[in-house]
Structure formats: structure tokens, C-alpha cells
Image 1 (cartoon, rainbow, N blue to C red):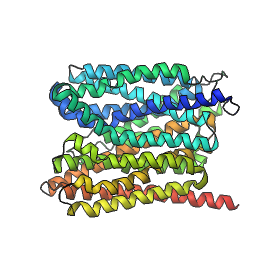
Image 2: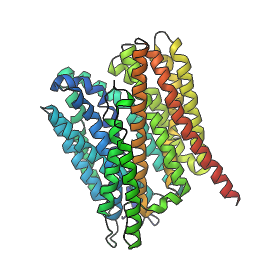
Image 3: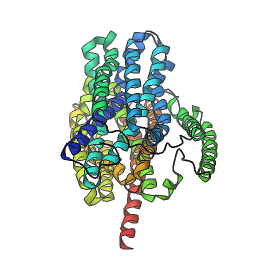
Image 4: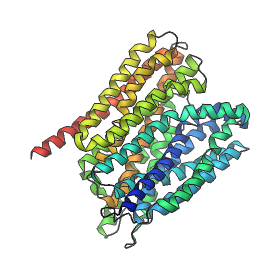
Length: 479
């Protein structure tokens, strides 16, 4: 089976599509887990390698930075060449880099390997949305993206739990190494399954890879992300090198000018600038950016509150977030089935549920005394149910008017926006959280409530964009 003949399938080929999806979801889960699972291992890494704050920061930031820069070029590479080949190359690099991280003997060693891991993850992720876009149509595409959304929500939420279990299993000295080594057998299995089940693209005229556009866009993303990922937890926002955003804006202007010139020559560009004319894509892009700015930071400040404020262990703090994972997994599966019927209204409903849940958490936390994680469980379940109605349906709706031949690049841009949104949210919310801890003489409950105001604001901006797209779609339907 090829990527382009998915509309006329034998029963065996239909079955193989779902096998291919399972391979993609396993790879996606592996890359997403490494975003959150490593956070609980940082104290052990610091002690085991005698690493300083700079190295520890790059264990997190190096992965996020490389991941975010590679996403769009990797999506374009998959569209222009072989999505299967790019996917397998990413899995191989991620697996090798994971082994190197686990075997690290020096701080510099693990920092460099984490950058390589991020590149591998960035190669893999846009191919997943590209495969789904090409292999599935109509309601089945919604179901497939629903499973993808469930993977995102569950992987992010269970990362701290799995990390805590592995560290407890391996002990303080070597438990952090298991956090990386666990990816090695998964990666090897993925390479075998990908070779067997992932479809090969139909041969066509070879497209330009737009190397100048790749360099310009990648450098611009580097300067966007650097101020967001290079500050340490205790640094004030004012100490970040925000002037780099001006350089990034200039580079993006040069990038747009180059893309227009490259298009005028009849060549394929890194980004199809006509995507900015697809209103559903633009609004979905903005919605995803602001949602992830709030979504990602929720887990970090809640974990800090539980561990540093209430003395929870890493495993206990992770288990406290399981209700979110359960809710997200459940509603993601339902959302994938319902998105064809309810469209953008489903996403709006999910955002309302999340905003309401965060407001309740903000109101409850200052008054809770004992068993805080247990008492927050129903509210986190509600937030998870809402989150599952946002991620996958938004991807489906954002790409539904995009040419499938641009699915990799479009999906890569959506993922890049999510990574940038996550970095923005974490940078701002963490800085405000720790500033409040200092100013309130260690009142972590007050710091959580204060930082939640920012996450709620991010979610409300996403909600406004969802409502705007809902109104637009309703108006277009009447015309």
C-alpha cells in the first residue's frame, strides 16, 4: 500500500492502516514522554553527574530547542521525499541518543545527547500527522486524530508517574539512567514495525527541499525559543534575552520574502504561504499555541506545589495527575468520533471545561488541608475531559481544508506552534510562580493560585479563537 491510494483499499490494506497508526502513536508517545518524564529525574542527574545548573537546564532546554527547530523542515522533508524514511531515521537517532544519555559519564555528554534526542523527536512528530492525513478520510480521520490526541494527553500526564517508578526501581544512583534506557527497546521495536507496516510514498517528481528557506526558518525559530528555554527556574523574566525576538522577527520577514521569490521561480517552498489564507488553519494554529501555553505549564506548577510545597514524592505527585490522564484519554477517543458531527463547537466546549476546572482549582487550593491530591482529583478529571476535546479535534479541524500533499509541512507547523506555546507558557508561568514563592515567604499555595491566573488567561485566548472559528464556519455555512 502507498500513501496515495488510501481511498481504494482491500480489507487487508484497511487493517494495515490501523497497524501503521499504532506504530505512529507508539513513536509519538515515546517522544512526548521524554518531555515530562525527565523532569522528575533532574535532581538525580544533578547528583549522579555532579552537574551544574547550566547543564541541568540544557537537559530540558536542549531537547525542546532542537525539537522545535526541526519540526517544520522535517515535515517538508517527509512531504518532498519519503515520509517512512524520515520517520525511521528519526526513530534510529532518538534511540541511539537515548542510549548515549543513559550511559553518560560527563555533564557535557548528556547535554549533547539530549539535543540529538530532540532532533530525532522533531523528525518523527510531523510524519505522524502526515501519515494520518494521508491514510484516513472523513470520520476515520477524526478517530485516528482522536487516538493521537489521547496519546498526547496521556503521555504528558503519565510521564512523571513513569519517571518516579523508574527512579524508585533503579535507586537514586542509577534510576535516572533507566529513564533514558527505557527508550532503547521501544526504539528497536519501532524500527522493525515501521519497516513492516508503514506505507511507502508513491514515486513522483522530486521536489525542491528549499535549503535557504530551511536555514532562515530554523534560525528564526532558534531565536524565538532561546529566550524562553535558557533561563533558570529562579530567574526573573526581565533577565531573559528578549532582544533576540526582534532578530527572529527580522529573519521571518526575510524568510517570507525568500519564499515568495522561490515560488515565483516555480519551485517548491518550505512552507506553502497560501496556508495563511486558510482561515481554519490560521485560527487552529493560534488556538493550539495558546492552549499549549496553558496546558503544559499546569502540570509543572502543580507538581512543584505538591513536591516542594506539600512534600509529596515524585511518584506521589505523578499519581495525583492520573485523573487528568484518564479524562484526557477517554474524551480524546470520543472527540475523534464526534468531531465530524459537532466540529469546532466540540473544541469550544472542551476549552470551557478546562477554564472552569482551573478556576475551581484556583478557588480550592488556598483552603485545602490534607489529601490535596485526592481532593483535586475530580477537578483534574474535568480538566482532562476538556483537554481531550481540544487537542485531536483541533488538529483535525485545522488540517481539514489543507491539501493532503502539504500535510507534513502543515502538521509540522502546528506542532512547532505547540512547542513554542509550551515554551512561552513554561517560561512565564514558572518565573511568576517562583517570584511569588519568594515574595510570599514560601507560600506555595499562593504561588500556585497566582500562576494559575496566567494559565487561565492563555486558555481564554484559545477559547476566543475557537469561538471566532465557530462563528466563521456558521457564517460560511449560511452563504
